[in-house]
Length: 178
Ligand code: HQG
Image (cartoon, rainbow, N blue to C red; front, side, top):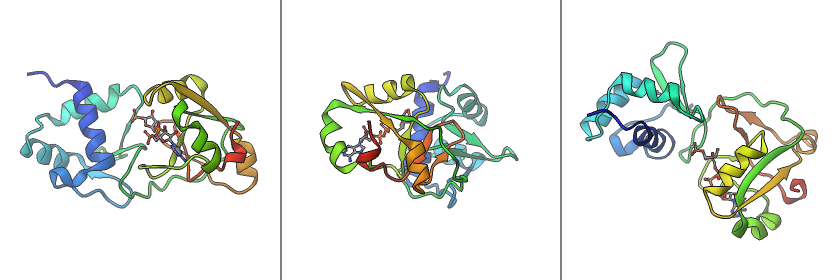
């Protein structure tokens, strides 16, 4: 039976971001796992796919969610982790404005607390408004915050760019939100 690519992408996100132990995997400190070991353990746990299926999903992922190591042996999620990982991305100067899409029901508390990572390791920010809108729509009626990333960077806040272009930072205090 052909593998459902969306299902496999969701499975890989689940294992590589949230629950590697569910199939007996351990992520390295920077989030990588051996591809053959991942395929073997997933199949043993009842989720059937091949190395070729996995590479297909990585290549066609709309958001480029997964990175393959330079030697082709390992895979990791580019971002989105809830498990503790140190991706080792270098801090970078962000664009002067970044965007964060959320749901209208979170707006009041965000204006008090700022943006917090919640279940993930870092706050996720988008370089463009259209992407932020799609992210917000996942949660309900969308609201888009403009983040004054330039001002934050000037004050020493660190920003990281994941392999897939998503921007990451630890916390956005409310005074930088518009
Ligand atoms: C909200 C997807 C209350 C925050 C997307 C968001 C993204 C607060 C929700 C990536 C808050 C967390 C990440 C506060 C933030 N109080 N709520 N102080 N601060 N929030 O899913 O950014 O398809 O963990 O606004 O495309 O929505 O999975 O984060 O609504 O890139 O690859 O708490 O996940 O990518 O939700 O999405 P999430 P996110 P994938």
